[in-house]
Length: 127
Image (cartoon, rainbow, N blue to C red; front, top):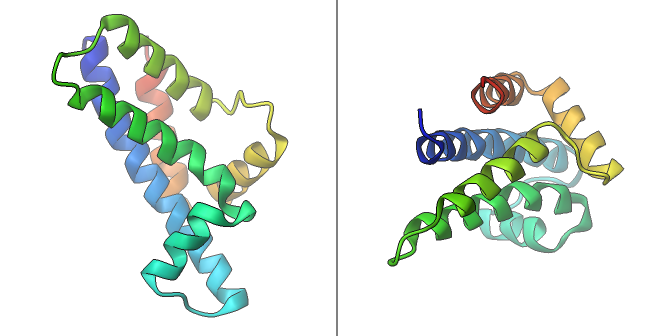
């Protein structure tokens, strides 16, 4: 598998992982504060500091999508840069302790997220 294919496959798994973590966090939030409409929850995701850690996933997904959507193409170096960023995110190399704690907690509490995380790690670190 070349790096472009690796990045595409990893991005797709990251999107599934992100969705599982979002759903998990939403369930927890709504247990305490009651149901929220999709618009209200989106607003929380964008503005509430408790959800800031999830923005690392969505930001990386958007950056990868934008790279693939470029009309004039993209360089192998850009592909490699995104793969490095994905590996760092999934390996929890962040120095942000809140991010690490919330990510680990989500993986421990949500079977789907843990499975997707494991699949993504296997893909990214199989070399």
